[in-house]
Image (cartoon, rainbow, N blue to C red; front, side):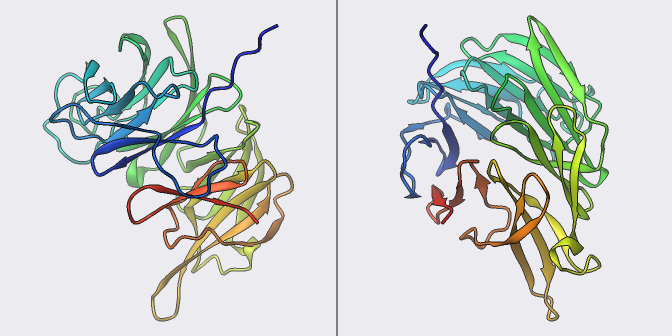
Length: 314
């Protein structure tokens, strides 16, 4: 029997106007160099980029469209959001490519864009831009975070509604139908998925705690309040940052102020099974939110050049 090849792991960044893809399947550490750079189509202002794992094309959102281009900036297809929005701020459409590169998942914050319709979540054929499936959402989001489940074709979407909270959905497609599930919260922000896909991490919208949930049910495995880390919950908060360092370790970030009102943050290691705090963690960055955990004991920060820097634990 011939076993399918595991898709290449790729991370995408927008650097100096170019959509850059970096291969994570190498052992390279330090500042990463892009394996491919794609130019957006002329006149497009990129909001959210994604490069296919075969490195042959990139997709991105603008405020009014999803676009697929070849590395030289030639447009393959364009899916317009109609009507065009006259709002320039407060809505950030996002896209992500499935691990096999066949589907583009698109979150459209249509309410804030003033399109007089509900927000939408859509799945497009990555080769043609044809609509596979879509669903109206019960949100008025400003932007979204989409995470691919590592062991299935499921996608998670966190819709940020500003001061109104955060809504988390799960979806997959069956034929031309989107199978949509909404988790029963409006006050939890999605932070990360475990490498084995069995759990996920959220942070309370009011920054009171972090929690680990079972996947796909969303049942709470454990909750970590600020005092579990030895801090005063009246003056220290859980940051909307962190993730899975590896299968056994969750990183939780706390934020506070000194007596002279200087802001500080600190990362902590937490046992992903028991919830026991294991000590502090040095993420090698001054940006509490500028970290992307890769689940294999490595993580990314950002160099002054805009390119990612890969670090390893130990």
